[in-house]
Length: 153
Image (cartoon, rainbow, N blue to C red; front, side, top):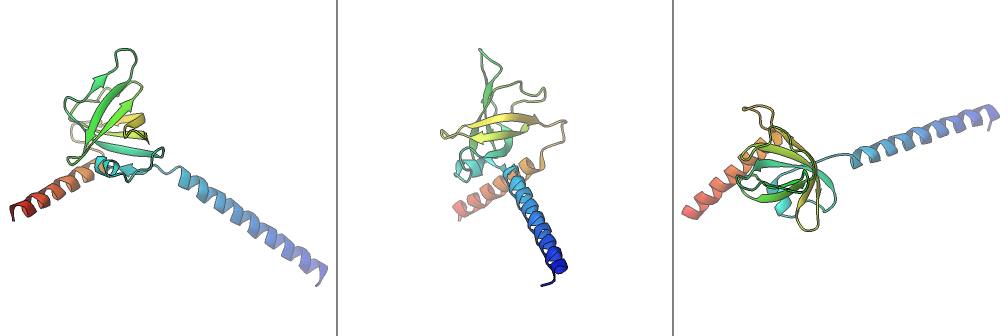
């Protein structure tokens, strides 16, 4: 083979290998940083691996908020109408956080079934509900209606 062609071939192979490695590393890092949204029903059914960072959301159950007397933390339950998940958050809750309101929490599910949140987001006005929470509530309502109709038959 001609030495000039051999140099070009080696350069092209090196560039292809470099681009392939860069694309592979990029895809791997992006897959590790995806935060999936899970409903309380999915969490209760065991579809969420312990220790994986996810977003969970729903409506804060009325009467479930317990604020810590020693720190800034709070424990509360979130529901989508079909299941409830206990969330523990050590930090200052948003000003708009209230019982009966929609929230989205980012964090990890612990081995004991409690969701340990690192961030809690509350809705920003009366008419807003996170799209994922709205869809989850509609789906739970639809599933509940179907179950009620089947029970009547």
